[in-house]
Image (cartoon, rainbow over all chains, first blue to last red):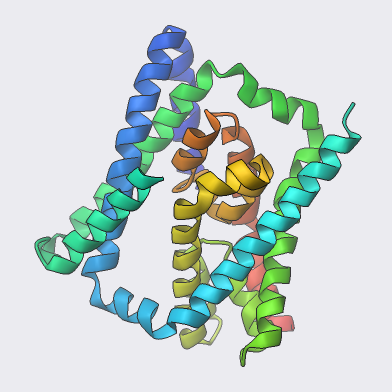
Length: 90
Length: 199
């Protein structure tokens, strides 16, 4: 976790050293390439590992419903909290 | 969103087809790590000249912590609701949901605490949460707003879903995502242990 924060800060400082347009352009390209490669690799891992697939399919619906409920709860609560915060702010 | 689904889907198909040699498992792990660092470095560079990104944090002050707190409360309440309508106990649902998307840690933690099958269930649930986040983040941002989009990712909003968060919001939500992700990540061991041992 801390290494990720260090890399984020490093990217930030390198970005400050170069022109705004260049930093945004290079940053966008790097983040897009990183995202595509990351998702593809995650997909390969999910598809390739039989054990992982077995876990996901055997728990299937109950795991999915719990993940959905937890995500939905977080969305609703955070959405409400944002509304309250925005109302209070001048 | 199409790009996200396509990348993930193509990866799953590629892995499932057996074209990727299983002997390169270590290489795949390194590939994931390097991609994540490239992604986070790129987001950091984009952020460097994005003045609006820090405005939100500056204007919120300490109230910025309400976002992860509300997200955690919402996640746990959602899990409690599932416990009401399923054969699982409240303790199990809360312990699993308090992984907040960090599947590797929550699974291992529950297995070490003495329930390996619940650890596997936590692993699957939190993998699903990450996939649900990647696929749904864009419309959640449009319909429910920035805080909701950050909250959906839970602990992953500082790593794997940070890139999507940055793309959909034009970089505005990156600092909030990092703050929320760090706080979620720090709380995972605490909540998982608390719910499993003491509830």
